[in-house]
Length: 123
Image (tube, rainbow, N blue to C red; front, side):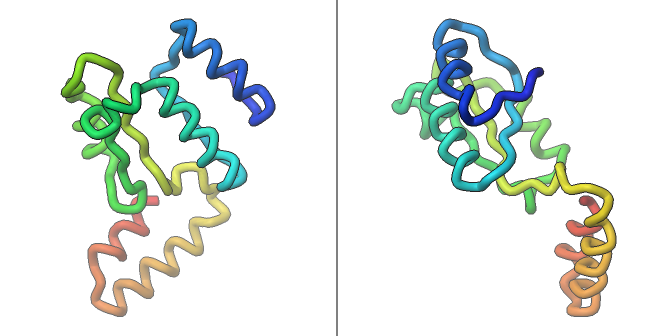
């Protein structure tokens, strides 16, 4: 999948409208820009009337890979596309941040917040 810059987003949206749809889109970069791009992408992929039934936003900090795969393996409730969006995931963080996640996990463990401590170890 090629990388599409924000300037090329209109061309991508046009291709999607024409039927060229990828199974996965990864949006990253400036928060304002990727949130705007996501809204445009969602509106092209899924009719607004189907957002309530066929769009499922997930919190990347709280969801694990197994839960995401389970949701991906379900059918849409309405006869249109289904969009699963994992927001706020740390999947793209580099190994440089590993020490920070380990320290956050230790801090959470010391505060007896074991669920949060385990979640930081999953990054």
